[in-house]
Image 1 (cartoon, rainbow, N blue to C red):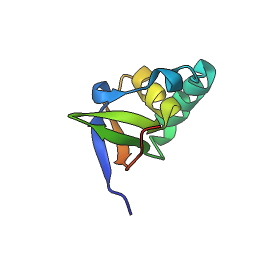
Image 2 (cartoon, rainbow, N blue to C red; image 1 turned 90 degrees about the vertical axis):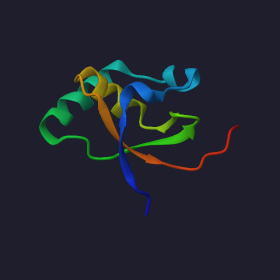
Image 3 (tube, rainbow, N blue to C red; image 1 turned 120 degrees about the vertical axis):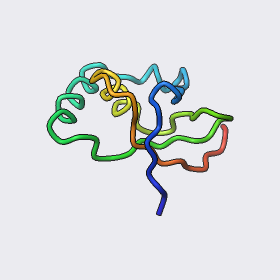
Length: 82
């Protein structure tokens, strides 16, 4: 099982292609749910030097950002560049 880490949101980079798939209404609804229940599922990232690249969890990351959170629960995975 992969270990879950708390990462600084500011150090998680979102690829441009992935950023284009953001649905603001979905992120807002998720933020409201997170206020009550917290982050249920960690995002997935890959290592990029001293930072991380988002693999999965754009709306979770955006929701936490909107709530003013500074960290996000994340799992580091091995991902191949396409």
